Image (cartoon, rainbow, N blue to C red; front, side, top):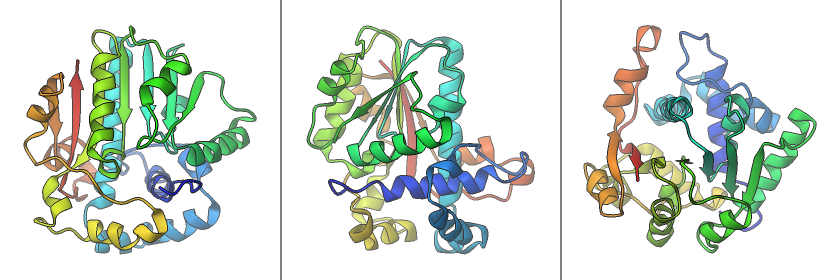
Length: 284
């Protein structure tokens, strides 16, 4: 992402959530009542038209299905940890994530970490939605590729001894290897017993071009607009060993088939979920 540019990718994902949320309850995979409020009207109508018309599905079969299922899976994961009991929630690369405003956090210390430009834009929109910036969230501006996440979090009141859930959605594929490793090391070395991280990742075969997918080609083609290039992937089937080597345990790897079985039922049975991506959940 360019220094002073908000994340176009994050806004595009918010459009998907907004369109998905307008569907009847038995037809939608995920639900986010705030997504529409975080994006400009022109973007909602332009990108929303491509989704509703079926053109987006034609260009990238199953991509929107995966994005919706990814949101739903992480929502379900968060609710599970809230039921289990956590002390802190950290959302890395928060973008226009609305989880801190639509889940009952019951006093859980919550941090939103993001690029300064995107976070500044989000704060402006939060003021418009709620009349002020919500006080129960601590906003931490940081550039993952150039700044120390540990230093920034600690400076903002993060407690490394508490049980914490880290949500890292739609981020890893845009980072370099060192940034991924340093973030995972932070979770292992600076969070309390029972802490966990959930994140999605790109299969290395897509990054290397061994496996072809239209959406990956499109993302590369429009990098000049987004400033966000694909740089990191993990080989399919290797996430468990990848995370265990970095100090994690109880790794759960979720693929397209798993998401299809879990969320494409009933009137949603015809929805497709694109392959090439995984979602990992791991504890320390």
